[in-house]
Image (cartoon, rainbow, N blue to C red; front, side, top):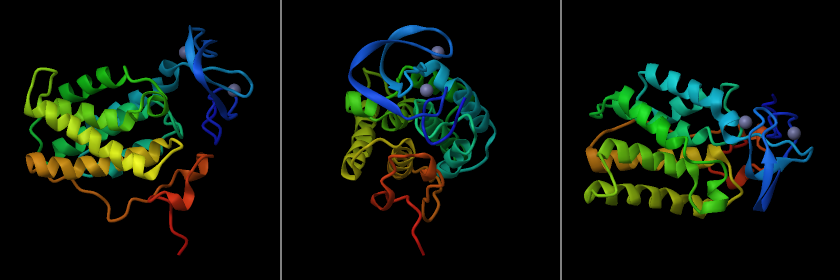
Length: 235
Ligand SMILES: [Zn+2]
Ligand SMILES: [Zn+2]
């Protein structure tokens, strides 16, 4: 497997995306399904194979950390080789980092149960929802976090509204920055908006670094560089 600049896990070459789903076979587990991307060599890797190692790592870090800073938790997780430059493992990573920091900052939750629920929900969100559904998986992950901490269900009134409010705020910010996708940029944006939201709604004060600087851009061929607020400045 390769964690290089290209995101094919088999050969490291860049992926090509289709507008319409095609029949594909996972190069790793052999599963046949429909998908929206193969690499230039024709390899397809299913979401389950892409995120298997990453999700295990995310859960292990978030169960153990005593940090109140979800950006630092996320950056620590992202620096592990099980997390690729982009991919659906981020749909678990963002909400789990928020869950751990929220608990450590005084949030009233059973962390073990909350993480288990977040894992179940987040695995239902496939890769590519940003471009194909109009809802970035990092925003969805933050929405799952808030749904769990606020007790939202389809039948609740205020928690339901709050959850839509949070994801809509995040998606607005992402739209202002524009594409193409970057799971680090969208993840940092989702976390920063969520930290402000938790303070407003529940008075829970998580911490954030003074400046959020990306250490992962060299592995992302489509980085916006100076167009991204997290690109390291030259000075
Ligand atoms: Zn390949
Ligand atoms: Zn597979």
